[in-house]
Image (cartoon, rainbow, N blue to C red; front, side, top):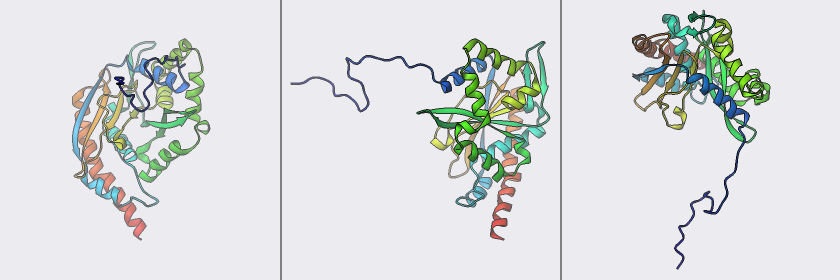
Length: 270
């Protein structure tokens, strides 16, 4: 009688030998980001929102040329909220002395998964001043970053170029980018991040980021309920401010952005 345990699909035999896998460029990028993020005293604040009005307006554009994904909607909502709460556009800088810097406008840094040299890799797409762009325009930016070849996107090429450098030089470049010049930090790294797995039916409870604020949201339910989080740098602002910002964001979603989507639908009908 054969008493061996049957192997699961994809499982290696018991006598198999492991292998060493060198870090790819995307793994180096992620390692550098997390190394910087570990120095940030970040705290998550969550608000359970009801976004039924904007969900209904968005659904009516599904399948049209002006269709808009949730990422575009939440990105613009955050940027509009940052007009009312300038603390969301601030950053902590440590050199040559600790201080805060406030950027005059928002720059969204959105995590995008792409296929690169046989593996799934995360890159960061930038949308400058999303609060001043229409939702279809923000969506067009995201579509470009998701579809255009990686080598043709300047931001992605720059990240890969830095990842090829020795790790001490990479970490120095990241440190300088985050701590020396507030204006360069905002333009090169963004004023806030967006990271979400909601399209996969999952939540990220505390995404790590070196930025002051990172927006994250879960799947939107059939009744319009959704958990929305901002993970913030406690050196820059406090939880009560973030809680108020989330409440304001909910009103922006169901007010200004729902109205914009309805207007886009009426424009199509006309």
